[in-house]
Length: 200
Image (cartoon, rainbow, N blue to C red):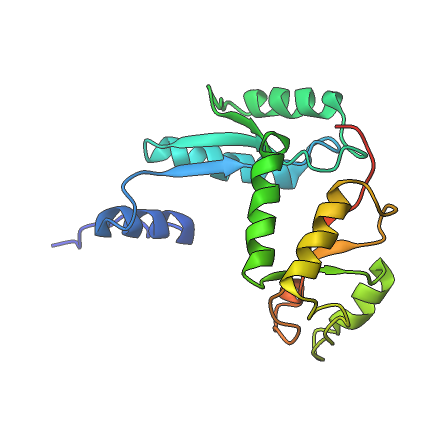
């Protein structure tokens, strides 16, 4: 008797979704596509759209379209409209789930204040070049910024003054206090806020 044919195993994404739904870790599928509207989409974006929207549709879930519009110097309405058109052209729709990161600026600012209060973020005066130099390499750990151990009160004061526009552009940043020896170089105290005078 011939063996019963079985369907090939799901790819790792579908396998993870199936497992999470089966075990009750999650009860529904909710994904998001978060483009930065600073240019036209390319084939890599198309792949991400098909995965994000496709997985949600396949499992009866929803996919948000959330524009990461946090850099007004590089963003244009033309790109927002083009991205929406491309998503529709690929056969997907976000329905009523259109969001802009900039709509949450105040909430994000308050989260940053919480991180400072918990000692998990600090205001840094290193230049961008110095931040890169202090970051280390893939094989060598980074060095701590000389501003990493400012007091919570000093950091709160400086961050408030950053927001108020008291300092020149790029003169100070808020950095997450993580681990300067992390094997993931992107987690070596990344910049989470910078000073940039631009209308949004």
